[in-house]
Length: 189
Ligand SMILES: [Zn+2]
Image (cartoon, rainbow, N blue to C red; front, side, top):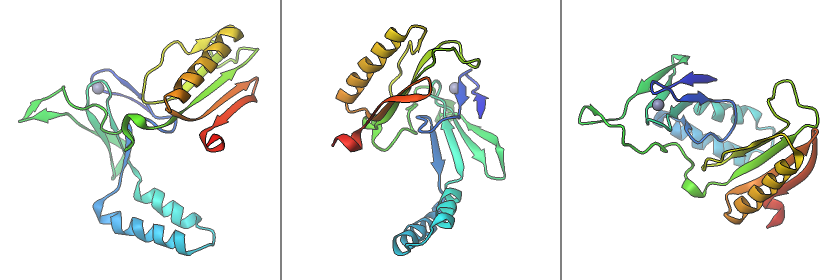
């Protein structure tokens, strides 16, 4: 899903772990959520229906514009409609608010991941042959490449840097759709 904020910021909701997206659960559903957790712990059967129910309980999405702080909440009666809320202080628009309301409860220490793809033959859907896609709370620039050496150097440079800062839980490098490098924190503890 894509939509525009009133300030011009373009929202993209097509990946996981988005820093400006959250999910709402109604307080009236909170006890049912814990009942679901209880059922999962007790049963050793296929819990698919319970997981689906948990997903339903958190069905409503909200977004905060990282540029101006406006908040958008899906209308439960019509999910394709987003209701916009403008930050106000004493009735006056207040643009200087915390614009990172929806980042992880781990805050800036949240661990994201690093993903990179290289194609010897430039794919039709792409303007370049190499791309690095970080999912992080920090912004990185210059992540598209046309020569392999710069692509690979930049990937390993970023990998070492982010691993050192403990900001990634895994990293993957694919070359012509083949996995050539994979690191995961779990396997290296
Ligand atoms: Zn905005």
